[in-house]
Length: 130
Image 1 (cartoon, one colour):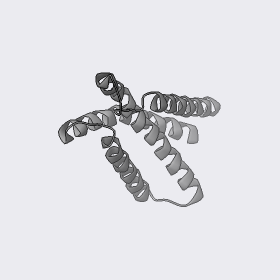
Image 2 (cartoon, one colour):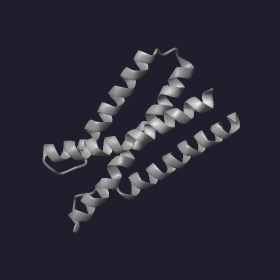
Image 3 (spheres, rainbow, N blue to C red):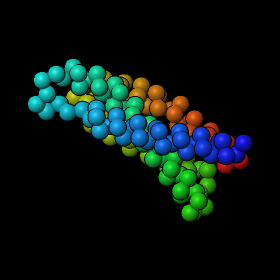
Image 4 (cartoon, rainbow, N blue to C red):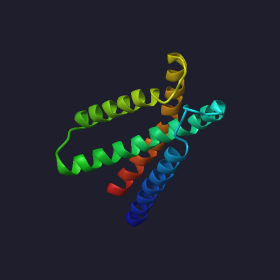
């Protein structure tokens, strides 16, 4: 049963990473010399959750690698995770050319969409580990 969890975890991380990298490259918002800004706004709805999911994958891998190299307490790991996600949230605000209220709302919704992915990744990792 352990092999199945390991394969599932690795497949999940690899497919998620490849899909996110593809979406981030394909849907990067470019408002300069854009004839269809509404299309860019629509693609932003897919781009931002992909950004948060990709950052959660990086965060997960960072905590796994850091946990294997150095002894990190749960509290330290939580602080690192919160700081990383705050930086990603602030970074996501730079992609939009809207008012601050709309930027915060769109980024918050995108972050909420990415939370289940992070939880599934952590659950698969825990199943694989035990």
